[in-house]
Amino acid sequence: MTIAVLAVAAVVLQQLPQQPSEVSFPTQDGGVVYADVYGEGDRGVVLAHGGRFSKESWTAQAPALADAGFRAVAIDFRGRGRSRGGSESTAGDDGERFDVLAAVRYLHETGASSVSVVGASFGGWAAALAALEAPDQIDRLVLLAHSPIDQPERLPGRTLFIVSRNDTTARGVPRLIDIRDQYQRAPDPKELVVLEGAAHAQFIFETDEGERLLREIIRFLSQP
Image (tube, rainbow, N blue to C red; front, side, top):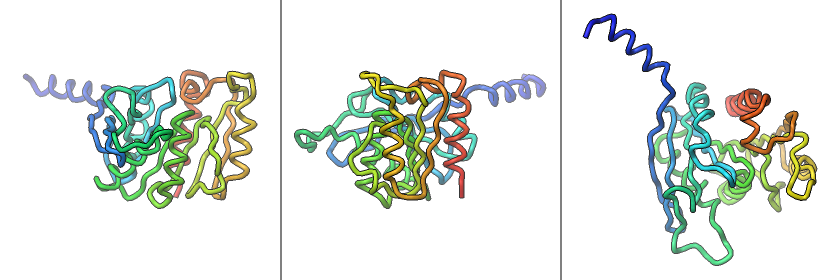
């Protein structure tokens, strides 16, 4: 093979989408979480999908985070893919926050000096509960049209709330109402970004606001 052909091949490989590596790690209730890892470095980001998605739903955004210098871990919640809850879970406790915490712990144990979590819809709810349970383990939260939690006043660290202006619940109630209330009750430092349109959570990435959403997330995570 000539040098010219090798050079062309190298360029083509650089242009190919980044392929993640798959890892798995245990949860504190005896389960196991499977995840895709993008990028390297000591700034970790957990990507927690919404209720209608899986870890593969982040394949367009995770490489951009990796390019920005983050190591992104996109998890499958228990019951998705090969992830599962454990026998030590208790009745009435679905345990999804344990899946987020397992990913956070994995990042810390593999060299991350800081760990943030981006959670969408149901995944945002789980991420917020994880932050309440382990406030010293999560540095920043991005809550993308998250399902509200009971005590946003206790959220630790920096929090970015994002929602589409006309996103509504199944009953037709604007989600902005509850999310603005969550934002107002949360401690500083915090931000609220309201995007145009009616798309919910990760579906925003498929709209004209998708690029802005990704920029806002990277901007927030990159702040000193």
